[in-house]
Length: 152
Image (cartoon, rainbow, N blue to C red; front, side, top):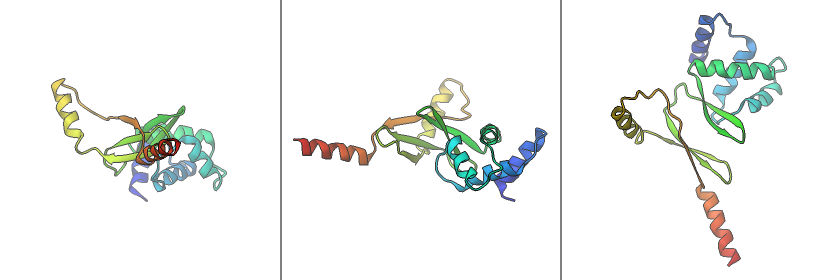
């Protein structure tokens, strides 16, 4: 049994719940993907191979995985919540391209000391942080400058 599965099983047991086959399928799918995901995409991907996994089970399992500390809601885009698995991963920042909607992740090691210093100033204990950095990626900036040059 994989470590994330053990953690989830223990979490469920403490709440009087079981690691059912649909929940196991969902958590295995989530930990096999290394991209950000939303509930509908998970459902669509899993449902094509496993007819016994319902949309409701996906939507009910996601909050359990969050509460168990295995995934987190990373960002919200076009009215959808996107998640990522965090077990075994370092904290990082997300840069979002407003044009192509790509997500670029970078390590937040250099940013965390600044946050710690600020939090000490106001006697605040950080449990989690989410920072959305919006702009244009290199590719989209390059494409926009190429279009400007061709119009001149």
